[in-house]
Length: 188
Image (cartoon, rainbow, N blue to C red; front, side):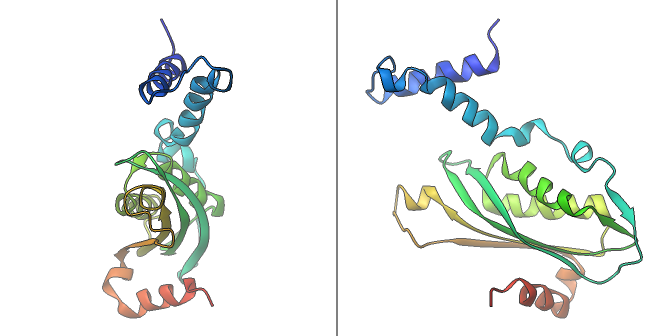
């Protein structure tokens, strides 16, 4: 029985041949395996789950003011064209007796980003995951990204970017809380 890597490599070899290239020429001989390994890495979020990733890194705290984590790099793949989108994620939450270890925010972003999807859904997944793990009074997530499907093909607009936001709890209910977050993440 062949493994998943062999299956993926076989498909990449078919794709290379399908576009009219010779998958056996010197420069392409190892490309199917390299591409398969790259795709496994780019989509490793499917092999992760929230509980294992957080690994108990939720700590009791009396902190109840806004916590902001800004400029978390993200790399994801558009589910429509299987092309990358690249950007940054800003997160805020209002703790309610519990705080999450700082590195876990980046790990949560990566776990969901390393799956096929659209940016709108990625934004929601991150916000809902943080809310479920921390029990926060509110969670806010903003993602700014550039999409290769818009830049390399189709309309080919090099300077376009997309911003999405998801506001939960107090960030949705309170204009002042939302405004404070958006002011804190604004580039000066």
